[in-house]
Image (tube, rainbow, N blue to C red; front, top):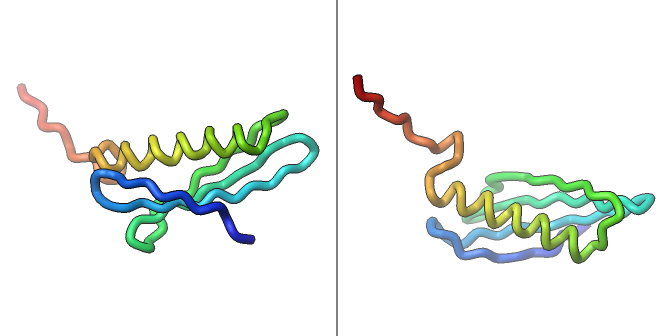
Length: 87
């Protein structure tokens, strides 16, 4: 199953994320694979009852962009630098 690709220019480069959707019994389930330079960096999932597909995709796109911006600005837990404490 192919996902719908989106491109986002972040601070550290060109990010691509693919969104895959499934609808079952009125519940939208979707997943996004976030890549940078062809390497998968994150997978986000979303499950929303009684949500139109387009609305769910917009929510997940926003979450992808927020995650990318967080990583680009060095605020990811895996990339965060230790804070030096005085005293």
